[in-house]
Structure formats: C-alpha cells, structure tokens
Image 1 (cartoon, rainbow, N blue to C red):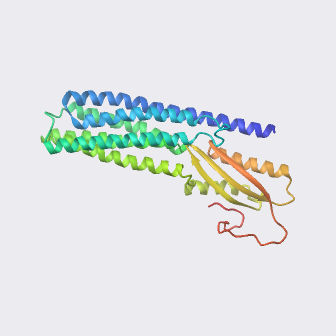
Image 2: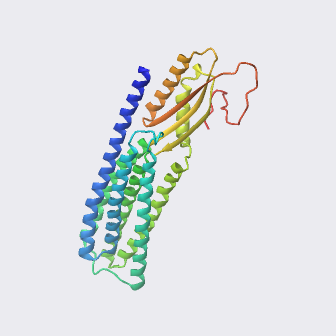
Image 3: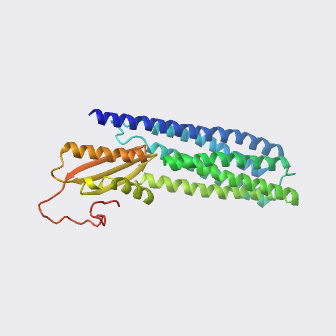
Length: 325
C-alpha cells in the first residue's frame, strides 16, 4: 500500500509540475501576442496599412483566444474527481476549439475586407520603411517564442499548446511575408501590395484552422495514440517480457496532455498476486517515466494451461506475447 501511495504521489507531483509548465508557456504566448498587437495596430492606423491592421486584429484575437486557452489549461490541470474519474484533460481540446473558431472568424473578416478594398481599388497613401522593419523584428520574436512552444507541445502532447505553437508559427511567415511584400511595394511603388498581403494573411489563417481542428478531432473521437508512440509503448512493455506470457486488448487514447492506456497482462498461473501486482506497477512506472501525464490500467489474467486453443482475434503480436494495435 505504501509503495502504491508513493508511486501515485510521485506521479501527481510530476503532473502538477507539468501543468504549471504548460500554464507558463501559454502565459508567454499571451504576453507576446498583446505587445505585438499594440505595435501593429498603432503603425497600421498611423499609415492606413490594411496588411498591418489585418495582422494586428489577428494578433488581438490571438491574445483573447490565448487567455481562453490559459483558462482551459488551468482547468485541465485539476485532478480527477468523482464526477470526472478520467480527469479534465478534454478542457485543453475545448480551448483549442475556441482558438480555432476565433481564427476562422478573423480569417473570414480579413478576406472579406481585402476583397472589398481590391474591388474598389483602395490603396494606402504610402508604405513607410518603419512598417517593414517592424514586421522583420516581429517575425524574429515569433520564431523564438513559437519554437519554444512547439518543443513543449511535442513533449507534453498538449493540443492547447500545439494550437498556440502552430498559430504563432504562422505569424513568422505572415509577418516576414508582409514585411517583405511591403518593402517590395515601397521600392516598386506598388501600393496595392498592402491589400494583396492582407488577403494572403487570411489564406494562412485558414490553413491554421485546418491543423488545429484536425488534432482536436483526434482527441474528441478518442483516436489511438500515434503509431510512433505505440512503438515506444511496445518497447517499454518488452522490457518485462520474461515475466509474463502475453499482453492483449491494449487500448490507448489521449485527453488533453494526458494519455490513457489500458491493457490485459497474462501471467503464468503459479505467479502470486504479489508478484503480478509488483509487475504491473513496474510497467506503469516505466510508462509514466516516458510520459509523466499518463493513466495506465493493467488487468492481470492467469494463463490458460488446460490445452485449449486461444481465440485469435487478429491482433495478437507475431511473437505471441504482445498485442499492440
């Protein structure tokens, strides 16, 4: 009992540390978005640049959506309770839905305004070099922050952080493209480049929406973990292959940054309850060591030595001891 409590306590402490880390990451995205937004809107209004206003409004919505994501990450970090025995991880996916939806609305608004301006031939009076410099500096800032967020998203498998990272990553290309386009427009005297660039911003945002909702759909439909993670799981279980007969009915899914893994572990009949119990804990500890925010359930079964032919459900591993779909 003490061993079980120690393992659960260590796992809980690790999960709390992971949750705090995710909150800090999203908070960074919020601060960056708000600061950049203010600069873009000020310069855009000063010189009547549609591309900067479009990117400024986009960034403003980013900041608002990031606040929603921050709340979602905070709620997802709450421990499991009687009403939510599998935890609150889906709040992160819900936060990603809110952010994706806001991006979609902004993209439609920017596209509509750009088309109207193009149809009426509206162009700014000038394209200042200040706007080009601002976009260049902003793209560097976004590269640094989005790289950090992408690294954390891959490590935690948080859909909320992934949504933030993908969104900020597009800002690199958008701001660099807008800055370069404005510079070309300034040097060549093509003032219409401003409106064309605003339309390009909208197109990039539609791409972001697609990537965000694709990941959210995987989690809401309880899709299995990615193939590369399934292979890692198989390797972790194989470490203990000499102490069990086979593993079958392995089921995986993801909820926010949490992974849920269920499996049936078949042991020899002479294996004591204490030995089987210890083995299951070792496997759980190995999995948590790989992915801290993981809920693992191991069901112990005795091996049938009566000589009966086991039923082949088509998922048994080639070695006859592992079933990892």
